[in-house]
Image 1 (cartoon, rainbow, N blue to C red):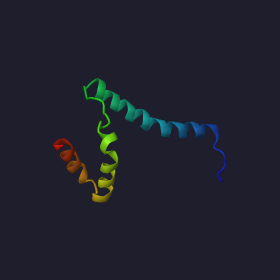
Image 2 (image 1 turned 135 degrees about the vertical axis):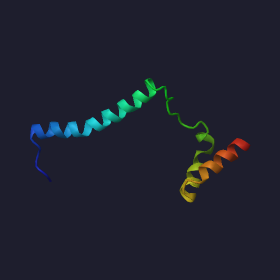
Image 3 (image 1 turned 90 degrees about the horizontal axis):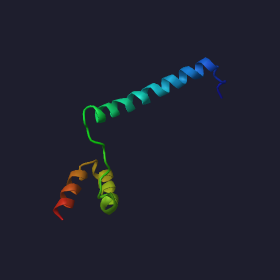
Image 4 (image 1 turned 45 degrees about the vertical axis):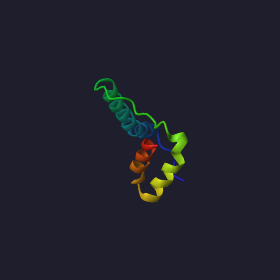
Length: 75
């Protein structure tokens, strides 16, 4: 195993890992609060057709999402 980092190196490691997280979170909050972008929501029909959609996505490479949405809205 590697040796323990000195305290200054631990601080730098913490800074390097947390700044991208803070930046991404701030950007999402800026878009939501300032630009008025709505929150992302989960699909509501996942309880009824979730397993079918996941299986189709895995077998067709993502083309089935549109087909499943069309068939769900038709029925």
